[in-house]
Amino acid sequence: MMLGLAAGVLSGLAGCASFDDFNFKKMNFEVFRDPDNPVEVIRNSKDGNLRARALACLREPQTNGGSKQEQDVVVSLLVYSAANESQPSCRVAAISSLRKFKDPRAVEGLKDAYYKAGTFSPQTATVVRGHALSALGDTGSPAAIDVLVRVLKEPPVEGPDEDRQQKLNERIIAARALGHFKHYQATAALVEILRTEKDPELVTPAHESLIEATGKKLPPDARAWAEFLQNPNSAQSVAQDVGPIDKMMKLVGGGS
Image (tube, rainbow, N blue to C red; front, side, top):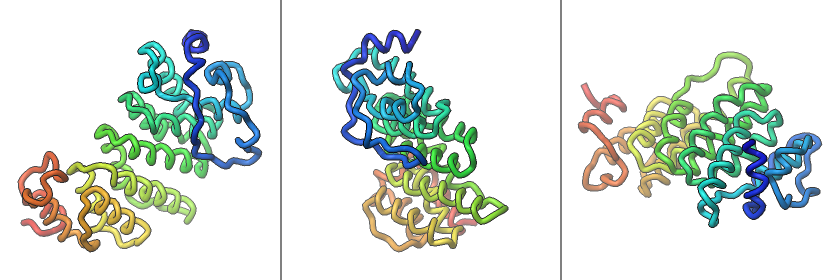
């Protein structure tokens, strides 16, 4: 029913100015033309490449002159596809579109896309999760912070080197994504990485994100960042919802 309705109202809502290409075996988006009616393609095509292209072409209706009805249809379609499509390329295409949406449902859809990626093989799941985490950062929505912080704080995985690297890659992407947020929960998590981690693969993006979020170029020293973020004169716009000053100092081992 939803797709049938969408086919009738969304013919003008396609636009593929850019798409974060996802290279899988036997895939080549270059050979496909942008579909005139992407929802019809998603509904009827059995070709994962064509569905992926159609999903990537969906733009947000209410920021492009569309109606609330069209908004509901497109958001529902992308949210479902990002978390449930059988083809990983289709999930990534839906994620690519959702990262540009302002609708709050997009953030929830991206969270689902992250948590449901485990239906694929571990390597493919890591790629899909990485796209979802990066997209959560691009939304700039405070509702995305909790997932990004949770991933960043996950302990290293025990097991084969490949498994450890895959988890590390997710944490790195989460660290970079948190650079979009001038919020205490995000910056405090990044400072914690500076305090506890030794691996430069993770420390470097955490440090760069702190610089991005604050505009302040301090060395990768947890205590220096904690003091800066707690200074109400110089960091008021960054340390939102901050408790007492010893909250951050305890984080870096400076409190009793």
